[in-house]
Length: 114
Image 1 (cartoon, helix red, strand yellow):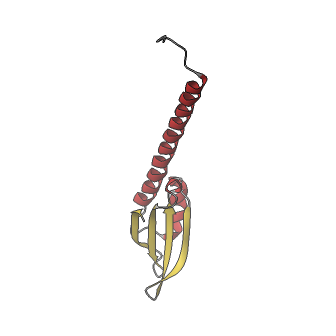
Image 2 (cartoon, helix red, strand yellow):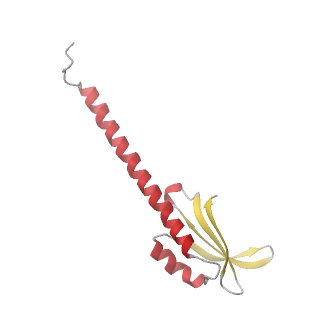
Image 3 (cartoon, helix red, strand yellow):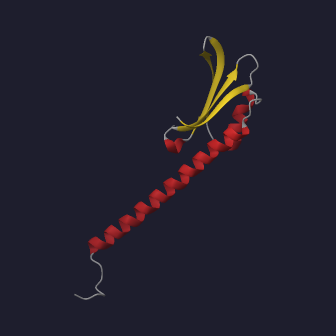
């Protein structure tokens, strides 16, 4: 057997397939991290004194999509709920915001996996 023999067609195709697969996994990983960083940046900018009307602008500047705000019934009292989720985690990672319908200010925020 010649140690300098050229690779067979099957070996070349398998190598190219492996390179493409590695590239796809790397690209997904980078997009995944970017998506999580954007959600983190949004949640870091929102404080307990943030007005609900400012959330769309903060979401736009952070590069995320804001779901809500919508009025919900929280323990018998009306409240406002808004959420931002990471697309690359299929919605498992996000920042949930609960605000008072009386003051219009964010009262509680939760960041992380659900």
